[in-house]
Length: 426
Image (cartoon, rainbow, N blue to C red):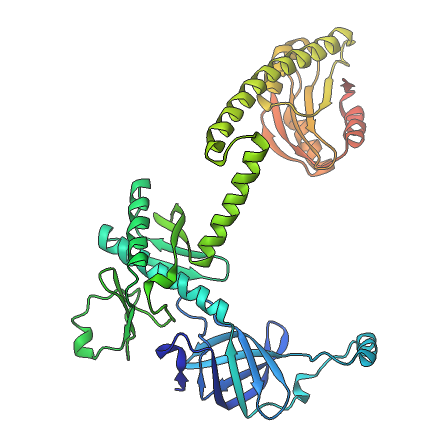
């Protein structure tokens, strides 16, 4: 067991340590360096949280190593790193680029002592998120009795899984409660109780723990066994925003953003609101009613347009049927912008007066076509099988009507239909 500086001081950014072991290993098909140190402030990936990243500086040489991952095994932290290529003089740079110099990791002199430095912005961001998660999980447990059964914290997302469901009002109550804790700005307690003390503490934990237990307490809100770095004062979390809460495996998956992430999220949403307000020539406060009105107007216009499209499609089919000759009466249309319900209705209106197939291929060449084809005298499933064999089309239906998708051009489909069904194209 080696000293884990992050356990006692989440704000330790830089440290000096002897190297216990250093060697070349393979990570995801790449040769990299793996270090074990006498002490470290790099938090390893564990408990649903991704690891710290940062730098190692060899105290005896000019070699620098970028630490991209850390993991823990048998209570030992392992650091994975790549050698940082130093910039060369201008005269040598062109030659180096031309030769595409590759450094063999096995030829690098490995350090005996290093100065380590974590990426502080990344560390503090995760401290904000993880501390926010504790407040949310503790509040949910206290108010609703649900347990946090899953947690993930990466550089992009924070998700919490609960074994219960919430109403919209519940979510608002949780969010208001946890932000009250932030604004109260009280001290977060981190300690290692004795076994006797631990038995009296009603702490949360997803699994049975053995050995020395680290407790993180937000007085009045949460007490939880946790190995990760946390903020010293709740005010440093800044803000906790519940972004979503969706049904998941019989419970709820909740996504949150805290601190700078919440600020960035608000900034992005505000920029979007400003953009929409400019387009609609309304204030930001009036964006929703303006969009609602626009949506209603669009729905009415679409309904009216569909009426015209139905008439046009009906007229095209009627014309094709009127000009058809006996067995060669298979009106097939290629078009775009038509609703499937309209197409089915028009086919049904004319299908009794055709002696073959009546159908529509719609959308466009780039993504292929969707199709609806009907007949009262031919088995449409035979045509569906032929389309599948020729173009690999996907779809379904029955003898009287089929629909699906085919990736092919209009000319390719027409050529196929000429040979197969003597199609009359309209």
